[in-house]
Every structure is written in C-alpha cells, then in structure tokens.
Amino acid sequence: MAFKIYTKTGDKGKTSLIGGTKVPKSHLRIESYGTVDELNSYIGLVSDHLHHPHLSAMLKEIQDRLFTVGAALACDPEKELKMSIPDLKEEDIALLENEIDRMTEELPAMKHFILPGGHVAVSTAHIARCVCRRAERICVAMTEQEMPVEPLVIKYLNRLSDYLFVLARYAGHIFQVAEIPWIPRT
Image (spheres, rainbow, N blue to C red):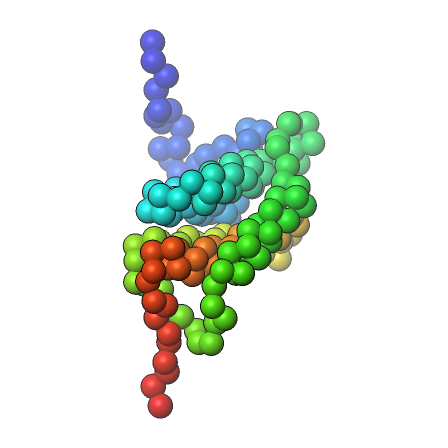
C-alpha cells in the first residue's frame, strides 16, 4: 500500500515537533519553520527563472541548508540532544559571503535604493529576500521569548537575505535589465 500524505492528526489545530511534543499550529516555532519552508519554495522559483548552472547549484545548496534550518527549528529543544539533527556550520555562512563578494565584483556601485522589478528573476529574488527577513525576525522573536534558537540559524538567515539582495541585482546584470532607482518625491 502507498504511503498516505494525510494523517488527520492536525485536524484539531495541533501538530507535533520533532521529538513528539504537541503544540498548536499557531505556535511561533511552527511559524518559524513554515516561513523557512516558504523561503525554500521561493528559492526554487528563483532558480527556475535564472537558468544559470552555477547559481542553480548554489541555490540548491542553500535549499539543502534551509532543510537543515527547518529541522533545527522543528525540533523540540528539550529533546534535541537525543536526536541526530544536521547542523549548520560557519562554512555555510562563509560560502554565502564568498558568493556575495564574487557577484558584487561584477556589479556597478549602488548609488540609490533600488525598486524590485525589471525581470521576473529579479522580482522573485527580492520576494525570497523579504521572506528570509521575516524568517529571521521570527527567530529573533523566539529568542526574545526565551525559546531556544541556535544563534548560527539567525546568522545564516541574516547573511542569506544579504545574498538574495545581491542575487537580485546580479540577476538583473545577467539579463541586462537596468536597475530601477528609487527617486523619492520632493
């Protein structure tokens, strides 16, 4: 018999963390890894719009790291030590920083704030950046409410949003689309 995707266990608004602890689906921990899942989906969409071998490989690597982040956030912190959950590493952040630097070398200096748009890949990368910032804010809120979040998760999300901003600019460069400067009304 095939595996069924539905379990009916969440029909009353509860779900289980990794480790078995039941929490309401409105719990901030569920919101955190749900937002990371949303981010992961947008990153897949960015990759689909780019059609660029190096960037697609990098984005697939990021998607893998986001599964690691999601697993860490979905874990009951009181039971985490008993489970084998993959970890982020400082090298994951260094990879993002190296890629930011590599792309920035090919981009003109920014002289204005820029508006998202000009190409679907540019706009989608900006959407992913915004979702990433939301995931980061949720994780920070969790720490403020004394819910454990690995500090490297917050650092990774912070750097990833920077990467996605530069990627949006780089996508415009690849597709030869002019950046749209924000010129405030005077």
